[in-house]
Image (cartoon, rainbow, N blue to C red; front, side):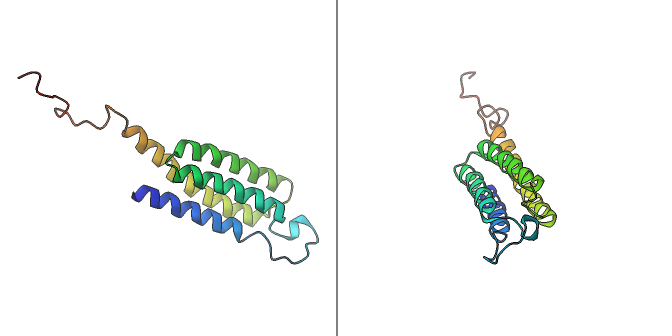
Length: 129
């Protein structure tokens, strides 16, 4: 349960980071003058939702795949000048935190697979008596 809370918190931080950058509605002279255009913010927020949804569904492997897609979208937006350097750095830092939580969740799921959770000597049902 604690892991789910940590994942949700990380995803929330990422979502807030992205939503706070969607712009103020003021006219923009160039893409570099604003954090990024509303269309870019919308696409990135949709990708964040995909990460969050997969994580909430208990599928950290799928969430990592969605996170990879989000990371690529962000890099593309940065290369096109649609995301400022400081905003890119901020979002990338948030992505790294979420990635660490998701990778830990994948590792925890791997440890919970049948055969991994039995304690030595506890799997015997008394057949040797």
